Image (cartoon, rainbow, N blue to C red; front, side, top):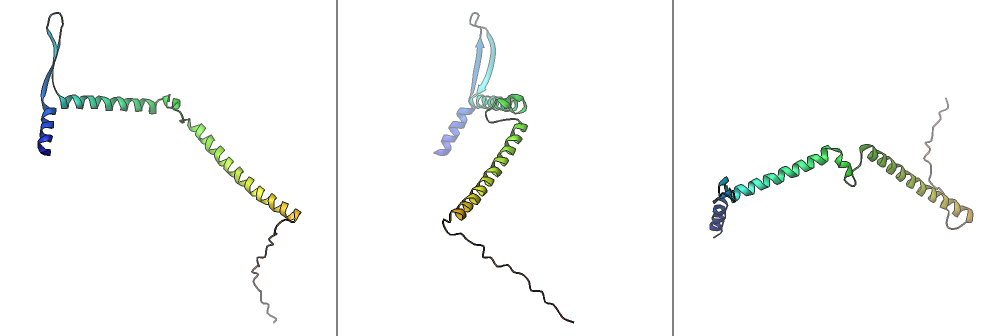
Length: 131
């Protein structure tokens, strides 16, 4: 059954039709086209793809792209990246400063346990020889 439906659909697409443009006053045929549904579909699809391609090319290759929200110039993007890097480093430094000041505050007020550095240093023993 599916095969006969596919054949009938394909035959419907390939049926030939005639489009005639006539002069209304004299009933004279001005233009005659022999078309099928498939040819009309292919023609309209081609026109659509060409128009979309031209529109994209117009936006990408001309200064119109700068009117798109979120799309800036190369210099603006570089400046934004530099500002972002500086902001991140400043935030990190502020966190370090806050931790340091909190430690100083605890040491001055005597709150909490002050953790002493108890790391042992591994100093190599140098042997001396008496000759």
